[in-house]
Image (cartoon, rainbow, N blue to C red; front, side):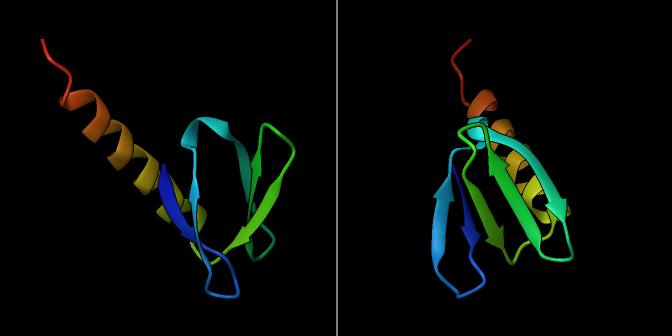
Length: 64
């Protein structure tokens, strides 16, 4: 999960496997596979970087 910030400042944790797509309108809207949408302060690029960082951390810690 990654942490995002709603426009009102509330922090939310989002399961990255449920992110279907994102758009900037100009606010960033994250749409989940469930159809739920969140408007957040982070840019699409920031969210993308957080997802990559999370996945790298998850997969590099696997036992060989």
